[in-house]
Length: 199
Image 1 (cartoon, one colour):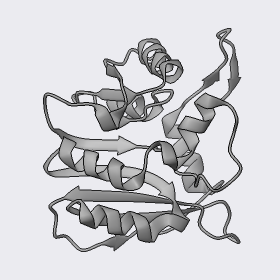
Image 2 (spheres, helix red, strand yellow):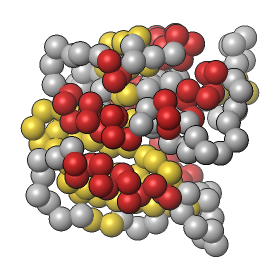
Image 3 (tube, helix red, strand yellow):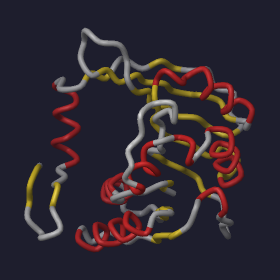
């Protein structure tokens, strides 16, 4: 399950690379929900889109994997006045404690939760994950450049795990590794006229 699917890119790429998985995409904003549907159709991806607020949604099954690129910017910063952008970016719309609790309730025992977040909030993330029976198994920090501090952290947590935490090598923007990732993703940005504007 992809929580807060936005354009649907995470789920689409996962389903493309692992075609046997059954994909569910949850998005509460109608604009982005329609984008998820459209992009799934354009790419020939079988999806089960759900137009709902994840925190208030009951599912008929538990999931093996949950992925998310949630809103992680602090509400203390200057915020966008655009409602769609505001909901997609700022974490008061999806508070960490409520988010992780609902994820734990939605996962099977030993299920995986993979997400990225603002690296400055790492202590709160680890505390809240622990409170909801998650063990952080892998952590990787993302840097805008080799000279700067980390801006993002990617976390693989597992429900009910007792595995030790593994700190992965840093991921640096514009590095050869990132270029390979983009090449493998092979995504395109298309405007609403159907014109390719960026690759």
